Image (cartoon, rainbow, N blue to C red; front, side, top):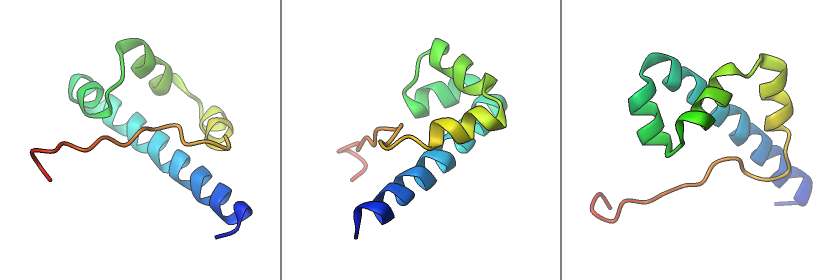
Length: 74
């Protein structure tokens, strides 16, 4: 995959992650913080992002989330 294609994939992943994170935080804050592995401060920031801010953050050239694997589940 070329660099441009990879960057587009990262941006799409970032956008999907931020939108899902906002939805999770709004529906069940405590569970979302646990599942996303974020602090209350970060949850507040994600929840308060405007659509324009979400799009701007999603445009970063690096992944905004970190994937975690639970060995017991795998």
